[in-house]
Length: 136
Image (cartoon, rainbow, N blue to C red; front, side, top):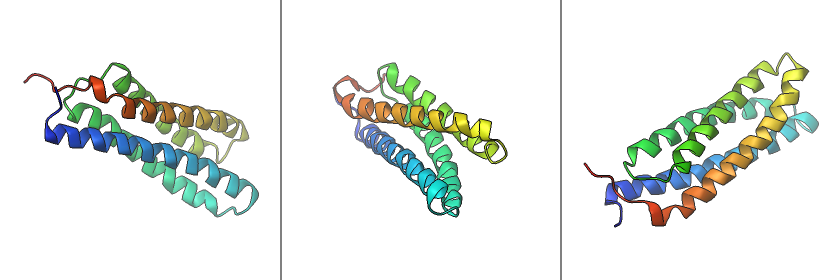
């Protein structure tokens, strides 16, 4: 059974938002390299992107529930994990302004965040056969 049209649109939005989040996380790594080695002003763009990502992952979590579909258990769990990692990563970035030790954690957490975002995107686009409308 296919999801209703509204739910199908929300599922599509969830999927494309997952891809956008993954691309933005990759762009964060590019910006970090840029401000470390080329242009210190890129840190402002890196910071703005981190703030935007924090909002996007919260919207992403909300979409899991708004779709009112039966996702497999891994979709909401991975989406919540990604949101937690992005928010922690943003906090580490702000704390890292004053501490090289914090920045030493910020980099590997960023790599982990990109990996989880990639997994969320892959799972989101492969879940089609298991999505069914929930009973009212």
